Image 1 (tube, rainbow, N blue to C red):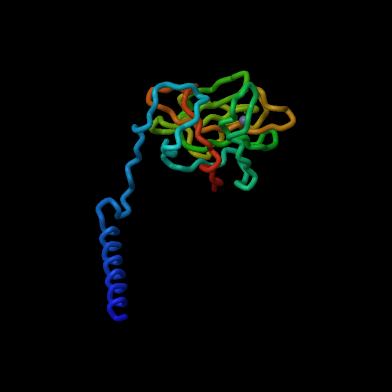
Image 2 (image 1 turned 45 degrees about the horizontal axis):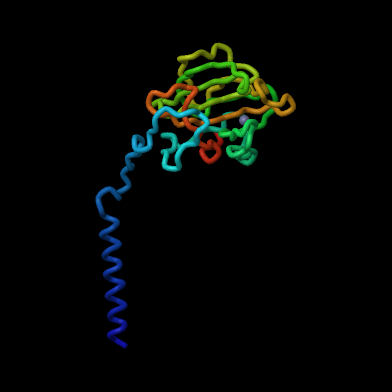
Length: 203
Ligand SMILES: [Zn+2]
């Protein structure tokens, strides 16, 4: 009986010792880990392709909900929704009344202001570092003076909610997407990352 207790105590003590050693291993001291970005960088691919699970999150990991006054509980994850011609949505639709302010989910530089058949009045903003592009579509209008090459801070107004492009006039909304960009890819390329789990309410 005493022998059995001794063995149990010995196991507990050695387990604790191993735990202490493991906690003190180099690299486990809370220093930030280096993201492995280059590991999964693909060749040029069309925008419809999904990002691999192993793709790193945007540097900040956080985007502000890009429609002013919308709370997280109001958001619906529509990333996987089917769209016409076999497409997948690859974005989140944020419903809001006409004219509601659209703000930048993340800081960056306006890379492209573009009128497209599907997206209507759109803006592409590339975050610093170049690896992420935020895409805003169906805008009713741009904020006056918005220009390509302009630096935008997080939360800065860029336009107003509308239904331009293939959005229904009865349900104005912001179509918002985050694209992971390989080195050298342009605003029309990249791979979609689901914005829903990355969105937080602004201040
Ligand atoms: Zn949409």
